[in-house]
Length: 306
View 1 (tube, rainbow, N blue to C red):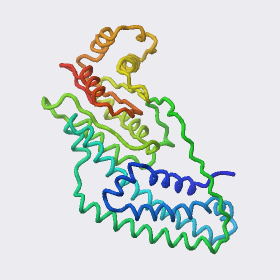
View 2 (spheres, rainbow, N blue to C red; view 1 turned 90 degrees about the horizontal axis):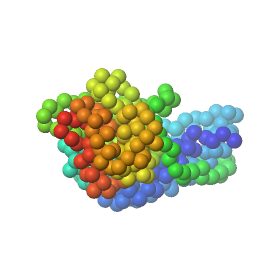
View 3 (cartoon, one colour; view 1 turned 60 degrees about the vertical axis):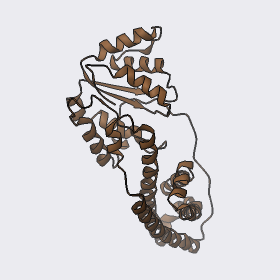
View 4 (spheres, helix red, strand yellow; view 1 turned 30 degrees about the horizontal axis):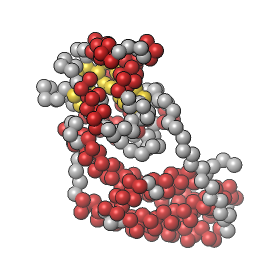
C-alpha cells in the first residue's frame, strides 16, 4: 500500500516535536504544554490517515476532510519550522558568533518577549484547528493504522548536483544567503563563514546545492569546492577531500602525503583565487577543530567564502 503523503507530513512533524532541542526551547518560551497538546492531537489524526487515504476516492466528504487536514498541517509545518529556527538561532549565535560578523547578521536577534507572545497565539489558533479536524474523524469510522515508518540510517555521501524535483520553495533562503556570499566587504574581512543549520531532513544540502550551482556564484568565484564531511572531521582527511575536490582528482593521490605537504599543495592550489568552499553534512561542534581548519584556509592573499 502506498504511504499517504499527509501521513508522512504528520510523522515528520511529530518527529520534530519530539526532538530534545525543541522541547528545551518550548520550556524556555513557556509553550511546552501547548506543544504537548499539539503532539497528542496530531497523533490522533495521524493514526487514521492511512485508512482515510484509501477510502477517500469513494467519499467526497472524506476528501474534503483530508483537504482541511492538508491546510492545517501546512500551518503546523510553518509554525514548527519557525520555532525550530528560533531555537537553532540561539544555539548558532552562541556557538559560532565569534567567527564572523556575517553569522551574527544572518541570525539577527529577535525580541524574546514579542516572539513568545506571537508563538503562543499562533499555537493556540493551530490547536483549535487540529482539535476540530481530529473531532471530525470520528464520523468516518476510520481504522487506526499508526505504523511508524521512520528509518534511522547513516547519511550517504553527497555531491553538488541537484535535480529539479528537489527544489521546492527555497528561493527566499537561497537569495538571502547569496546576498551574504556576494557582498563585497573590501579589506574588512577576507574570511566569511555562513552556516546553514538544522536537524536532518530540513533540506540544508539541497539549499547549499542551489547556491553552489547558481550562475552568480560561477561569475563571482574562480574556484568552487564541495566536500561531504559526514561524521569524519579529522583535519588531515578533510584537507585530502578539499584538495581532491579543488583539483577534480581522486583522494588516493593525497592520502600518503604528510600534513605539511598537504598544506603546501592546498596553498599552491588556492593561492590568489577567490573561492567558495562548501562543507556539507557537518555535525562536529568542536571549536578547537574549527579554529584549526580556519588557520589552514585563512592565508594572506586568499579570498575565501565558506
